[in-house]
Length: 339
Ligand code: DAH
Image (tube, rainbow, N blue to C red; front, side):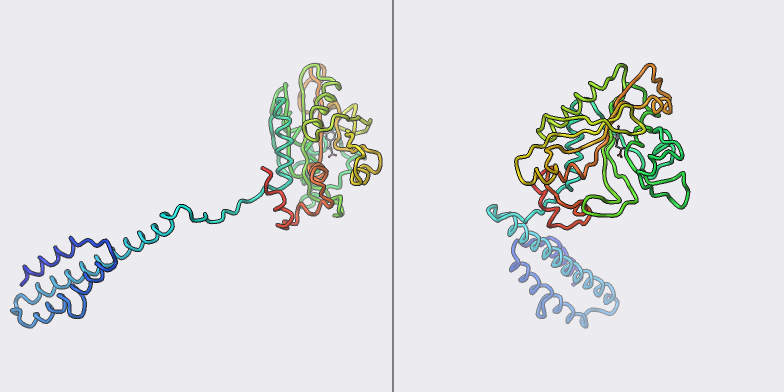
């Protein structure tokens, strides 16, 4: 009797099924109501008392083997079914793949980086929480300098030494501290100003700072670089430099590009002049070089800074700066096709 059960266990373990029907027939044969297992249980009373224990254990092993086999084969067959339905029909439309889109700020930032990296600029970054030295003092804006008022600063916990950087020019200072000329670097990043939020201004926005330092760098180099940039970025090749003032550059200028007066929008955004201001620039003030331990008698350089939102608004005709931060998918999805 015991040998018969052992034989059955072997049979069960060796069993294979390729269809659900075969598996069901197996189940009925071995553990169905009128199956072999129940027949064997019925035999139990005829087994000699001293063999009952061993026989009972063998029956249990048999039962577990049969049930385990059924579960395992059922899973295998179901998996196969699933694969068949999804993989065998190669003409089935694919699952829709929802590709995300880049934020317009990132798109424009990457374009700017791309244009300057082609002429040897590398990217550098600095902290958004800055100290007074890097954001102001080293940039020739000592305490009580009136130009500090132009940049409504957020201070951190009433400590006048720690602040949210008001411009990416702070990265200039850090970069000069840690690198020796020649320097060609571009520093994109987020900046903060305590300003009222409107369609044209926000308290958080983005800038890109450029810095070039070497021997014999002249204003002509700056102008030529800016011309190259405006051609590549906007496809416009007319610029003008208006004298201006920034504490960290001397001389300083504001860069306008000739946008044209072809459409009604052109009239509106250029206020009827055809000219658009896009950035500030100038020759790095010798004091700024000195503050970073670069000898101004040996080296000179230029710097420039521009707002990314402003450029993105121009390129994509975005009428309100707040749209960049609202995360409205109807706005963001419009940039889907742009890498
Ligand atoms: N930091 C200036 C701003 O936030 C922009 C700027 C102007 C940067 C002239 C420069 C520069 O590097 O040379 O308005």
